[in-house]
Length: 195
Image 1 (cartoon, rainbow, N blue to C red):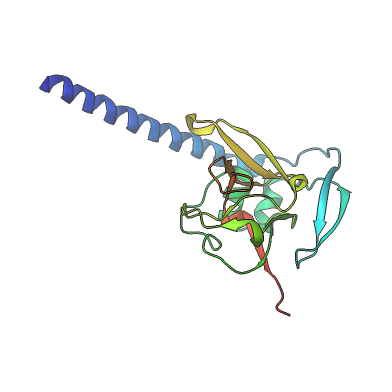
Image 2: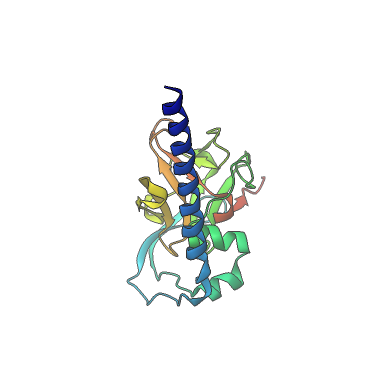
């Protein structure tokens, strides 16, 4: 029995180590050629809902997708913003600027300025990332299946520039039951002007 326990411990440790190595290699490979990726070809326009900085809904409009090469994105973003938004990295929990922000305002995409979330749907999830129970407009975000790291999650991206924002989970509060778990590095907060 003792020998069996020792083998299980060694096997479990080796499995965890191999998984960590796999994640590290995957991440290194993903970032290695970052500047070599050209801009995507122009695609069909998308429908977005425009918002004023005070959160007022303005209109639905057709907009051309924002497309840049990785080198162009690197010039307009910090290194950490680039890693999160263009390479789907994740900031550490409780490290972002907005996880504990309780001010009223609007959250825009750090890459293109598209309106994404409102403070009115923000809640404290206890996860260490800014969490919202709904986007400011369904048209402004896209959800797609993410199978990275050996698990299935629903990735959330900006519809206008395809920036990685975070993931959405089904453990949020009413009325939607959703938790949009976003990276602060993918967002730019516009505080509501005090009247």
